[in-house]
Amino acid sequence: MKQIVAAALALAASASAPLVGQSDNARMRASTASAPQLRFHVDEEFFKLPDNIWPSEAVGVALNSKGHIFLLNRGNHPLLEFMPDGSFVRSIGDGSTIFHAAHSVRFDAEDNM
Image 1 (tube, helix red, strand yellow):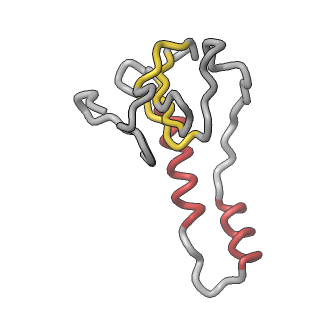
Image 2 (image 1 turned 45 degrees about the horizontal axis):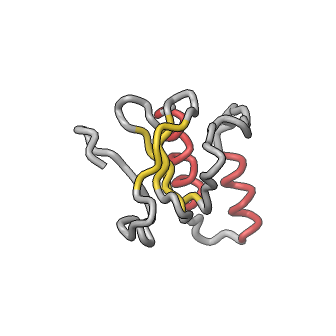
């Protein structure tokens, strides 16, 4: 899973680098042609949420060393934790302003958020 996230971030970074002296169309063709073809499968039912939790605009995703998935979003339940299989663990920060206007979530080498 970490490899997929790392590949997606690398792809996004390489696609966002400007190509000087080229038109928008030429830049689009160049970045599309050089982008690696990543194989993936969309699973719209992967995350198993309780009926009372609805995530809003997702602004960050991170994995800890156990493979737990953390989804930072702009909803009433700002940080959601899931097991690697997508099952819900907990919601963090409900009703708190601790995550107000946060833009990302990450873990360091010691699993500190």
